Image (cartoon, rainbow, N blue to C red; front, side, top):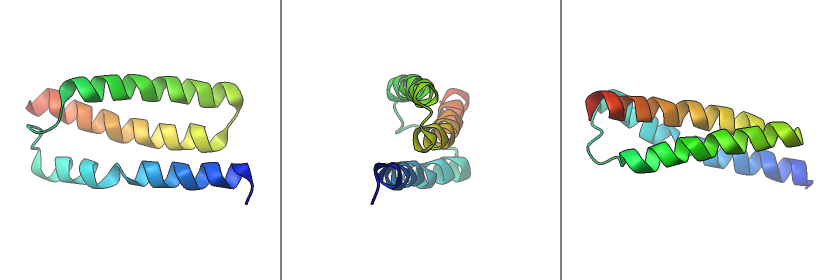
Length: 83
């Protein structure tokens, strides 16, 4: 297995890991147990990972960070809106 495929597999797993939290948060609008500070730092880190992936031209990094960033921003937005 090439390094590229390892990257795609890792990207799929880490991105899919956010789907249940995003769906639960969308369904319930309950964000009390979600740390605002953690999500602010996490979203900032994802932006840097995305920029790094773009700089490297690494499609696994680019695609996974775009999707994960969208999901994390959704959760962060709900946290900001619903407390």
